[in-house]
Amino acid sequence: MTLLHLALITIREGQKRSIIRLATIMAICFLILFALGLHFLFVQFEQVEFMSAREMELPANGLTLVGLYASNFLLVVMAVLISVASISNEIDTRVIDTIVTKPLHRWEIVVGKWLGFVVMIAGYTLLLAGGVILIAYLRTGLVLHDVPGGLAVMVLSGVTVMTVTLAGGTRLSTLANGVIAFMLYGLAFIGGWVETIGATFRNEVSVNIGIVSSLIIPVEALWKKASLLFQPRILGNPGMGGPFSVALEPSDAMIVYAVVYILAALLYGVWSLSRRDL
Amino acid sequence: MTELALETRGLRKQYGEKVAVEDLTLQVERGEVFGFLGPNGAGKTTSIKMLLSLVAPTAGVGALLGRPLGETAVRRRVGYLPEHFRFHDWLTAAEFLDFHGKLFGMPRARRQAIIPDLLELVGLQARAQTRLREFSKGMTQRIGLAQALMNDPELVFLDEPTSGLDPIGRRLVREIVDGLREQGTAVFINSHLLSEIEQTCDRVGFIRDGRILEVSPMADLERSVLQVGLRVGQPTPELLEALARFGDRVELHRSSGRISLAISGEEVLPRLAAWLVESGHTLYELSPHHLTLEERFLQVIGSQTGDH
View (cartoon, each protein chain N blue to C red):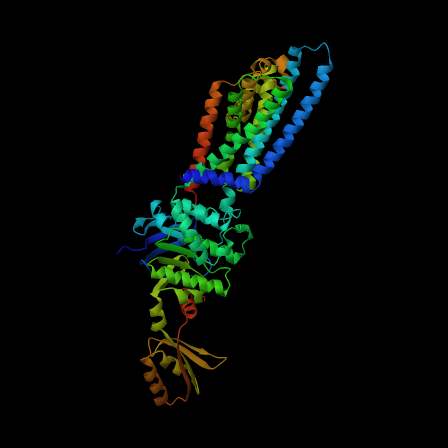
């Protein structure tokens, strides 16, 4: 029950501090922008008489992918922002003192917060990415391949970043933790692009750099996996997917690795908070 | 029940080379109000943190309510008001107490029953729906105190409980502590306000440099040592030497010409007066008074270091 109380207070804190409200407003703005952009582009496409329905599928796929890529980026940013100060700030302000002296284990604090954030990330993914997919379907009739699978992997990506940030907060100051979280994401981002370009030009070193960056934090690899689940036919073909093509498909083992990675980061957070003096 | 509310043996905390608490050996009875006194940096807060498992001791053992330090379940019967605390300030006072009640594992019905009573106890019944961020420092202290009492504890730690409170708030804390004593709750108070300790505690412990120097019942402190002020015609070094037979800490205050000394009890006074007169000294004043806690504090803390 304590876990549930701690998870619920984490979600309520997000509500009361307007984090959820502001993030929702920003997400709705993003979705309106996406819908308008998609609509007016398709108004133009529809005026071109010789463009078949099949030919229209390509820009629909491309734009939806751009929308999903932006959603994934916003999701990662949101995952860092909601969790970065969660524990470190409570330690700094001594809020945690009256909590850890209650009849509970410190691991419950970390896991309770984690559960609350997982719910928030899942909800945000559903709103953002789900919104993009729904808008694309309503305007263009585009049906993606594996929507539940793709969304689940996107959630996994957000949870990966959130868990690392939450665990970092048990030792680092809020600022240092935020810097490290964004640096890790930056590293994954660059590594992912180096891998894609390396694979296109068959450069083994670049590919290996990408793989190593995915092992350090598998966020970009998870995005690639999610996008392939959404649009396997388009993204598997470098000629059609453009810059978002996935030259090397992350294996299912990367999903397993991400789950293990999350558990390891969570365990570190639990261990770290349990061992430290407050 | 004979078990102690709190017991420690050789509890020690060291951060690298720095020793925060050298040796905390202490016993607090159930239903006792214990005051913990010491100068800044003496190790008071670190001691409380060790007792509440916020900080892991480097060495030593201890028990709360008969259970070893660090045991989670016993905290169901322990309350804590930290110094320099903040709470989830986006919660209302009632929500805040409800949340802490949940963490104590209290059922909903009990939480709902006790929250209005506690808010009334700390004088915040009209603020039940006010967010904590709108509270003044004194009101925050009061709600913190209510939080510490939420589980009807058998042992409460209050770290600077009157900090930020006005005289009315301080009196309220005294009344609450008296009430806790009456219902058999042990209270462990850290405070810089010696007058508060003097008025509320049954026993006091003096700590300096992480080591307990003295633990005394308040009643003994009030009775045991008498400070005597003397004014005589010609205070000579020989006189000061001779006065040492009647007590200790003989001192001549040159600005006022008065002599002070500490004697063990009132029975010494007639002998002292008779000797002064018989030995030919002109006695203008002989005024005994019991040491205040502050004087005793300065005596104990100062005498152990020689620099106070």
